[in-house]
Amino acid sequence: MHQKNIVIIGSSGHGKVVADILSLMPQYKVAGFIDGFKEKGTVCTGGLTVLGAEQDLPAIMQNLNVCGGIVAIGDNWVRSQVVAKILAIAPSFEFINAVHPSAVISASATIGTGNMISANAVINAYSNIGHHCIINSAACIEHDNQMDDYASVAPRVVTGGNVAIGTFTAVSIGAIVKHGIRIGEHSLIGAGALVLKNVDAFSTWYGVPARKMAERKAGEKYL
Ligand SMILES: CC(=O)SCCNC(=O)CCNC(=O)[C@H](O)C(C)(C)COP(=O)(O)OP(=O)(O)OC[C@H]1O[C@@H](n2cnc3c(N)ncnc32)[C@H](O)[C@@H]1OP(=O)(O)O
Image (tube, rainbow, N blue to C red; front, side, top):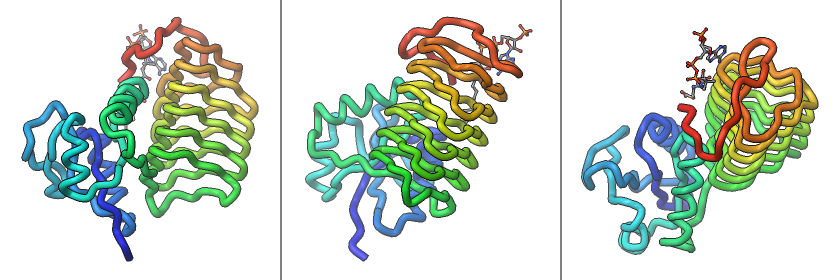
């Protein structure tokens, strides 16, 4: 099989998981990590090294025949900033999806690019996943869901049918979202929450049942 050479941008914990997933996708060969916070040559997971920072991408793409890769940064806002930086520096960079072979994705679901879909995740019929989203380990996105760009669901999140998750919104570990719920953009659902009401944009909700706890600003830290 012809393998495409790719890079992983971000070598922290999330980057390690993405590297594991990509090692199971025979169509890709990971050339290394891009990470501006580590010395070039630093050895990371799987013996992969840091090849340089974002600004080195044009040279790396040319010298190592790299066509693209994925931004593996868990924070939704930071991930978007890095994607924008890459598009400015290397417009031809091709964003790929890292999909664990154990993930179950309906043939009727649509998936954008730059997404991480981890082990045992389920994406059911007619759900639509945007670009640069994270669907973490054992998360279940039920039928007819809409996940907008840069949204994320942490491990073991479960959504019912017809749920909408707005852009940049993070649903934290183990949360449950009732069918039909709309969650606005830039919001945060806390760990273990049970979401029974629609969630407005730019707000933090948690608890069982979840209640609004705070307003949020775009880019506010949550991890
Ligand atoms: C692979 C991965 O690692 S994926 C990422 C996994 N991590 C996550 O999903 C964690 C996401 N973070 C959370 O859920 C956090 O709890 C947040 C962001 C919702 C809240 O964090 P903070 O604002 O820092 O709240 P803080 O820790 O100060 O707690 C304030 C109060 O709320 C309570 N509280 C905080 N989070 C929750 C929650 N999820 N459910 C119920 N109560 C909560 C605390 O117990 C505390 O109560 P107290 O004042 O009576 O002691």
